Length: 241
Image (cartoon, rainbow, N blue to C red):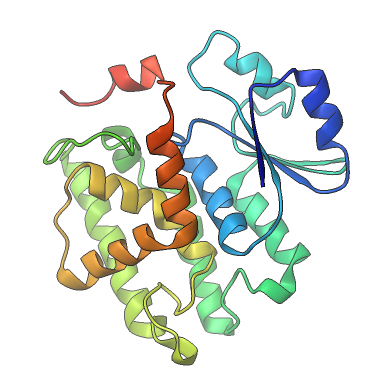
């Protein structure tokens, strides 16, 4: 995987239209939505060219608009196609690389995995607002609004049910559906949030979080996030004191 930071747009766009995949992401320390497809692609050894657009800069909107009219990251460029939603990107990858089994192979497990990803995709607004992702930050006990506590409770229920029903599928254990899948990539930013804000979980769920953090793809994202020197002023201004 090649990484490129804020290159000349004309050169990057030209390269992006060559054969292969280009994933446009934001800062790794902050961009939870970018983390999801990046981790999935890295975990399943799907080659891609990475372009990182710095967030909260005067030219951020202009740079993102050069890749997608939606004005947000992540964006996947695949030849002449543009896929600009994290869940749509993951679904596209699962279709293009069926032999890699990004989704669980069991029908019931796959249906549940899609359901919990969709719930993550559309829900948990309190958690997003009060516990925004900041991998470098440590804010134990902060952000505990009633809505956030409810979101933490619901996420815990999801993890407990998935691990109980499918966590040992096919002789594999440890992740939500046995083997690492899109579902684990989708909840990886939540694991990061729980670590940043010191969320207390039952031992079994703490163990799950540790396994996610130690997965090579997640660990690589975290290491690269920790190495970033750029900041997002607007984002940092909203972090708890």
